[in-house]
Length: 64
Image 1: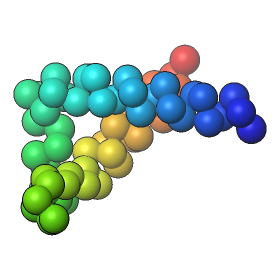
Image 2: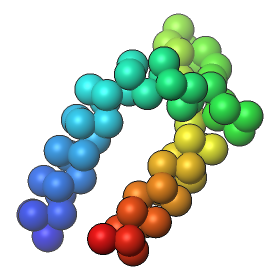
Image 3: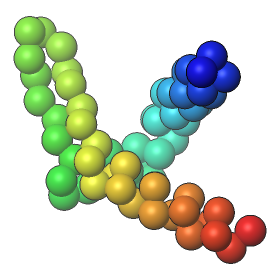
């Protein structure tokens, strides 16, 4: 259980670090990615980008 929490935390930190680079490539700005301001903060919900990256990683995992 602790291992999965640690892996999830590390993946979130990694994704947070490469997020600006992915944004330059167009991820986070696709149709279906929501951005809004609530309580003085900018919130982003990248639904389409998440599905696209998940599909790419699953194809890569099956190929390897």
